[in-house]
Image 1 (spheres, rainbow, N blue to C red):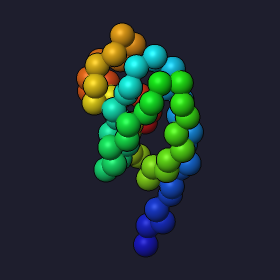
Image 2: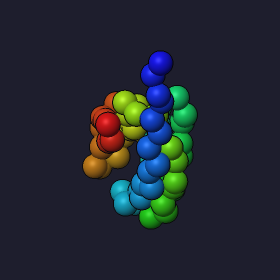
Image 3: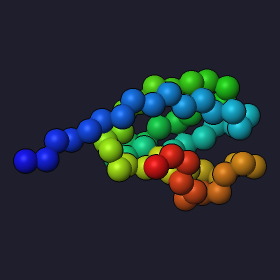
Image 4: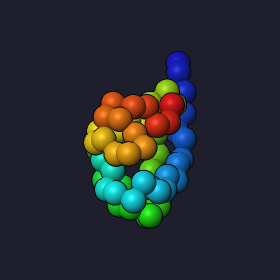
Amino acid sequence: MFKSEVVNFKITNGTGAQLIVKAGKNTLILEPDKSTDFTLASGDEVVAKTRTKQYDEGQVLVT
């Protein structure tokens, strides 16, 4: 039997613009200069869903 591992994250949006990301199965809206807590299953990714000066749409932010 496999044991599911969960990882706790705190991510801060330092882009100066609202950033929408896909975190595992969830979509999160990261407000500028704010921190957001969330959890991911081991192996999930955080992917940018909007383009900013720093990130392209579809760019993996966390693996």
